Image 1 (cartoon, rainbow, N blue to C red):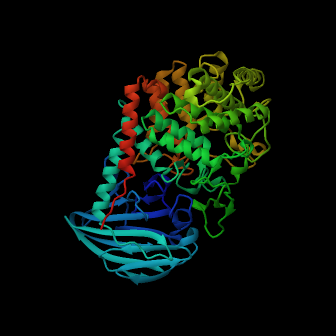
Image 2: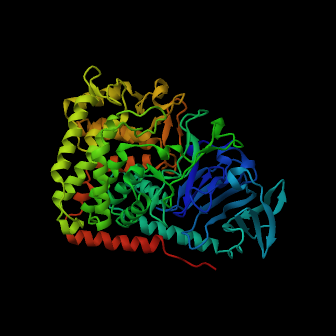
Image 3: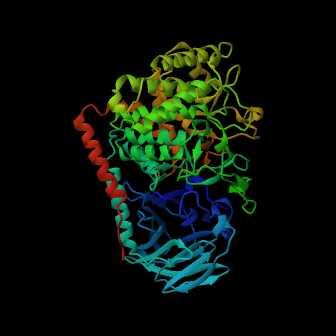
Length: 629
């Protein structure tokens, strides 16, 4: 059985990422990309579905874990009866081939160790053909090949590769694993220790340019590193999580594949990165967006593959038992075909924020902006599937209308604040039409989204149900937080949609007809961060800070969060690590600490030049190509 979700850490190379357990086992890894088929899938099954474990022979879990500085180099230390040993894990910044580098280091005594490598391509299904070639152990199946190099003698047992060895104080023993296409020769082994030091240096250089300082700096920095780890460097796309199939309810059916680029999650991630001084990511994501959504805006999807792929066919992996029996295990995501109105607003809002920090639209991006505005003029009145990707009927979701308003509002401000030359505008801008559309949406939400009997804005027009997404209303400027209707809504959500201090998205157990699924789910962590933001805005600063500190307290020992929190089991649930949760943490930290908005941070051309220069330095450092022989 897989470990609790909080017992995993992440290592990655901005192309893909692996989950490393506290027991020294890599239980999830997809190669060569985030959305490739997993070669280690024990996370969703058992050891026979693929994993790579290096640990003391006597067993047990790491006594201490931490990242090496502000990097993605993971250190796990095991105290045993024989002594102490350290396991160092990293995925070097990719040159051509992906690598997983593991180094065992003796700290004290002499410790007996074991290694077991079980490779199962195709999400834990395909046993490879294994042979030796030029000192490498090579495993091949279909299009994929993995090559292991280590000075330790290995042998095959029950379709796995195993080894036993001992390590003494001051000694280091390396293991490197590379992926290649099966018709190519495997890459030459790399210097494991140099790769680890270089990886640490690259990540720490990138992290050093974070503009956040003061209280919660460590939490914010770790979240930003995690968000950067979820970016797909070749294209600029940003995936929602590393994993597929981790359940929102232990043993339940709410299990989805999150290894794709949701436009909503990506725009929010981008906002947090821009707010923290990372300008290069904004340009890369904007260019990815232009490629991904090219064409008719009515065909815009809510998510795409890391390279901009549109077909994300959902299917069930019947040979995997699911995390703690949570079935079915789904690969792909049918929600890609949903219509979610809010996504248009979030994309447009990000265009404005990018322009304010010195990245005004190109002719192409302004053309896209106008096209999306034209689409909204004809489509904002239609029902949609909502932010939570419900699998019930479409409705007029209040949050969707609010976010459409927010995007339109930002485009109007962009047109008002920038000259036509800067924006690359062509022809007359229909500002009067856009202002009328903005007013019409606002008026309708106020008339139909607020239920005076409930004393709150509700999930959809005519509903009596609460929905935590409504907490975004003051955060995007639709209404001031101290508006009596908003205060009443915040109080209602706090009273009726909160369990043990954590905010639920909605009452899932009462909403089968809404989301088409059975069972409860955990508390959605982003919603609790939004509540902290709202409490601060209405003057309940002490309560806001207390909630924020409590949310920081449920991170694992490495500072990582999943999508949700199981209040009864007191465990993290849902896909991991989750961009939405870490974005909300970063934004709440900025809001509660009084940091300015992203566009307020760039007060002069001199500051803007510094940001751009820093961005160029970051890119050359984190994405530099190194040669290790």
